Image (tube, rainbow, N blue to C red; front, side, top):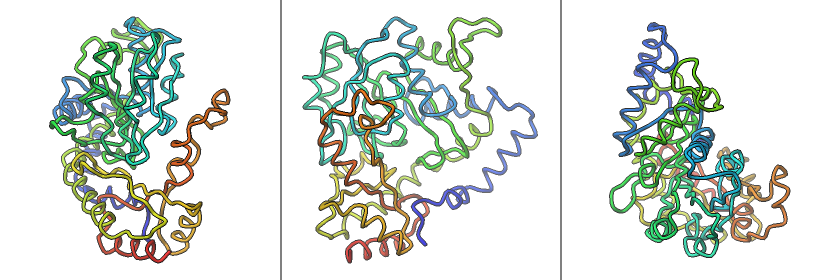
Length: 368
């Protein structure tokens, strides 16, 4: 059996250090909003290249707090529009609708699976207040054209960096530091994953940080004094300590992912399988390795690999605009997004899979 991703094996890479810091937290007796959070937030800010990091409960909350903070700051108001890629995990959309904002879906490019910057200008209206870019699958979604559009129309640029920890733009900036604010997920399967849920907001905006930190702490900036109607959304001390350990190895772990991806790229030759563009190669940390399987054979390949002991995952078989919870958009025609949902299959990748295991996956796919 070659699993899609073995979280047990990933944790075992740094088991001794993780056990040490967990024991430290337990023995210290301080479990929320303490020195472990302070240390991780400082180190993550240095890594990403922003002035501030605010830990929170999960990646969805991180995005929710960004938009809620902008509303509290008067930058946005319910009913405003936010342009967002149609091809994304539903959390990106939930964060927008949770705040009474209106998502405006933009199709991706089929060769990159990222938002099509050629389509954005036509979607902008007087009610547009922000563009969300999602660095989906661990690849860069930012472009110079998007920067120019944000500048021209005075729009906020929000990054969903849930899948791209350590991803670099061509000028050396890291995802999570490119826009006005970014939401990060530390779900266990991510490139930088906790031992449970966790998330963070990164930004250079001190006012935004102040609002986000309060909103995630019941709306309080001072004990028992509440400026906002907030929620409880905090990164606990154990998760912060674990993340701080794993952060030290993130670049190395991403390099292992790139070696796996390189083998796939050079050796996959089945005509029913197409690979999205991976260039520029350095702007991809390969959180996932998605392939597109044509001729309505995706599900058959998925089953064939499972029968041969290879774990694969379909991301995401039902696009957000086709979900029952968003029935009002079910009749929308977004053909590229829907094609990706019908054809995408993610192959095993991660910091612990070996090239020999990857070779077996490739041989099976090429024989399919």
